[in-house]
Length: 128
Image 1 (cartoon, rainbow, N blue to C red):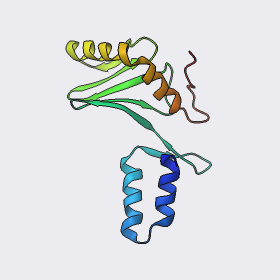
Image 2 (cartoon, rainbow, N blue to C red; image 1 turned 90 degrees about the vertical axis):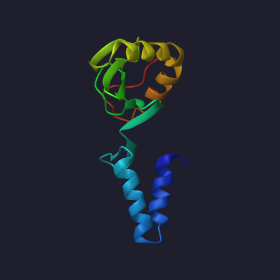
Image 3 (cartoon, rainbow, N blue to C red; image 1 turned 30 degrees about the vertical axis):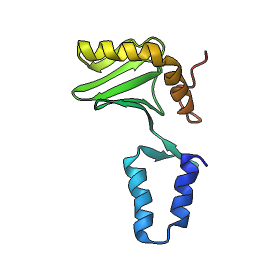
Image 4 (cartoon, rainbow, N blue to C red; image 1 turned 30 degrees about the horizontal axis):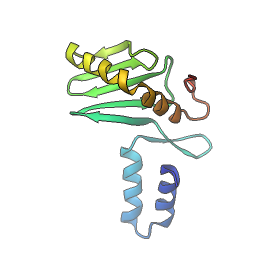
């Protein structure tokens, strides 16, 4: 059962308002949205959390394929293809660490990007 099926099941089998509210809280705080056809999708996928920094890929993104690094005064995006800094604020030390991590984690990052592409996404999967 995937996460969307689990949420649907939890919602449809809730016996109390408290259990139902727990599902709504998870939906509102967990980065979910609803497609026009009524199906759920995740608007971002957490790839990693490192010392307060979050590395995320998000659905419904603009080109080029990229990932976000946020937290601790850092709010920057980088290209999935080569880790070039696209925009945002990041210190030199943190940038070097992101680049170091990227060299070792690129395959997992591409997989996370491809798994997070919903139907109709303006930026599709990365072919390798």
